[in-house]
Length: 173
Image (cartoon, rainbow, N blue to C red; front, side, top):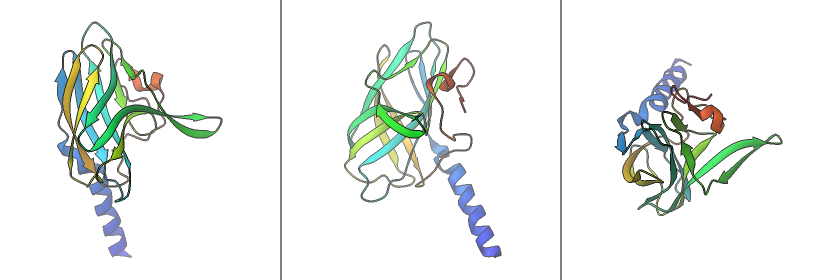
């Protein structure tokens, strides 16, 4: 019994601390923080990407999409509850980052989809992604992979665009 409890406690620490090495970046007025992804099963063809965007400028900007050497395409997607069913769809227009606002891309809301993975994502791996913004241009960001099923403390999903954007920290949960 104690072995099980210790193993569960150790797994909990790993799940909550794994992508602590995420590297922040910026371009123009956009600050990018806490980029992370999850390890994928060996046959998976898709992965997710999550991060926080802060627009410190006076003009809105928009995250349009991205590219990565490990995926054929990187798109902005949104998950939302419709008629009691969780649905995910691409958002070709991207996600707006209003002036002075922080937008969080997190599980259960807006996120990046890495499509047609060329190889599985391994825990601890750093995934290079070039993000493309409407105004600020393109910037290279490194997403650190947490374990399969990882979700940081406080990211419980289910956020909507209004909830994801605020003048404070965009928690939206």
